[in-house]
Amino acid sequence: MLAAFFRLFGRDVRLALRQGSAGTSTVVFFVLAVTLFPLGVGPETAVLARIASGVLWVAALLAAMLSLDRLFQADYEDGSLDLLALGPLPLELAVLAKTAAHWATTGLPLIIASPILAVLMQLDGAGYLTLVAAMALGTPALSLIGGIGAALTVGIRRGGVLLSLLVLPLYIPVLIFGVGAVEASIDGLTQRPQLLILAALSLAAAVLAPLAAAAALRLNLE
Image 1 (cartoon, rainbow, N blue to C red):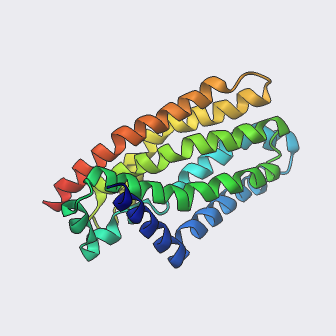
Image 2 (cartoon, rainbow, N blue to C red):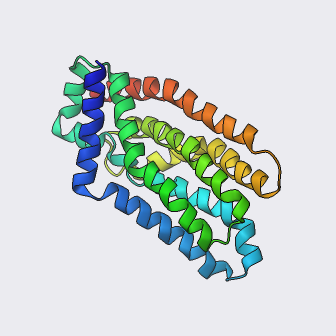
Image 3 (cartoon, one colour):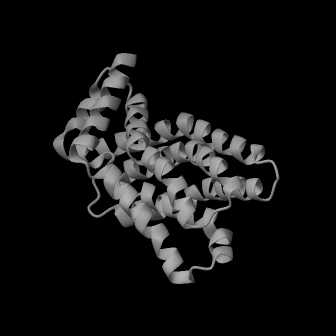
């Protein structure tokens, strides 16, 4: 069972890397979205530093959603999803493997790019490590929660808008505590509570999101 899990994970990662669109489009959108803010609000260092953490997190949330609508859609269209549902690997674990692959090809590039864009946004140096840590702890929850929305909208034509409406409200806690951790670090306060909450959100999502997504997929496959 464990071998089947890693085979599915590796398959999705290889497909994403072979197509070269998921991770690239995510990073490009992330860079463009963050770059627009200095152009829009002006180059004042104090203004950019004040909004830096919020801008980086909001752009990361939106970038993580770009490829969610294809998380299960391609497998649904070619019939692979039926095979996964009938295969020896429980559908919940299959969902977990696919969302883990989504994080590896979208969330991980966001984590790598975030310190570079933090320089552009004039983020205080005290917040750099916390930003990376918060992204590392929070972005898995984004992929897992997004998997629920992707499962609910699988098979729906142009379900991207509906997916966004379903997922964005659930992303708010990650946004609040992600920004809060960076701001606490900059203000000289402890960021430990916010980071622990982000870790708890990702762990809870790792347990609950595959169950919900698998149930939604079974309903759509009936």
